[in-house]
Length: 499
Image (cartoon, rainbow, N blue to C red):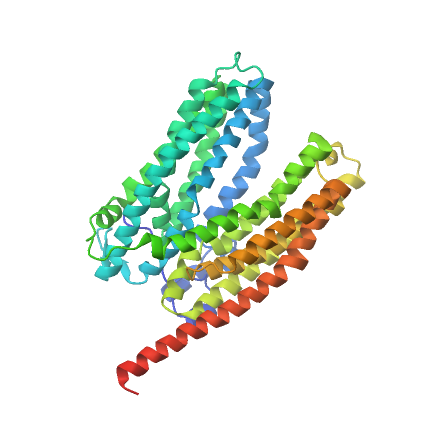
């Protein structure tokens, strides 16, 4: 199979794309075929939902569909004790993401910048600028070595923490948890080590096959969950799921991109990338911002659960899950185009990068606004009709405030995805201070007004405090960076021509 870049390649000329209203990234040759497509396909095209975005959104919404089925299966086949261990397995394993220390995002950015000087060969390898090829090979080898070490460290740490927690938990001597936990951590370590290879693929504009793999992984994973639950696998269920995930990811990397990674692994070492100087500053800034971002939203869930009890905590958790799933799906409009934005920025094609961001970003914000308002309307109707299920959600007012905050958060996310596509992440100090302020306000709001106070505080902080600051930073940095780069290019031209 050859590299699948037919839908994620560099865009055609801005004028051609704008004139035909074809999806961003499509070529003019495809225009007639687009017009002959069925009306659902044309609607997706007008909403700028290319195949990469479609796969990413489908994977998000599949979780919403499959979730209730999984809950019913757990209630049918798991005892309450096994259910507790099952969810705790996933909770503890989730901390593995902190061991990534934002390296995947840094890989995608650096790869997309180098990709502007490279191209595919007919046999699925890479060719182009020798220096860019050598640096990309250096990036892959260094990242693979780093993730191999991090995988071992994370595996030992999580295994030890899990053994300590589960051995002290209630009914630990009655539940077969030890070997399932070690098996789960073992497969998770192997899967973790593949992360840099998938990140390089995204940076090489192979977004569509990567997100198609994500969707396939989610669907097959749920089928495995349901089948093994019915077979009585108990805590071995997540082990089987992680093993299937590993096989699917290996299948993509080896089956479709064997020549690509062979080319990069054997790339000359004449022009190595200096990780400490070229990657680590951006990576560490992203990591620190991500750690402190916990104070802006996740903290309120912990506080509500502990201060108002599991019932209100469950209401907030379910309401937040639905709204945030919509936000995550809508963020795919821009997230799937980050490698393309990085390449355009490296080529200094500011107009096309701006056009893509503002066009698809506007669509995503409008769609999300409509969907979250629909959720609020449904909750209003359920409360008006005295439906029993309405008790499982927050009331209409706090739900509306959470929705407002999440829409504002989506706009901020798009602004910073664009800025990060430049390979820079400024204002670390302001970000940390802002997160600390948010944490203090949320603590005070929850302690005085519970879940409703948390929702109001979240909306205020995101829409009134953080969004205006982010918008100012976005406009200021975008003008400054583009102006500085344009001036530098003009200076080089003047020097070469002797003017």
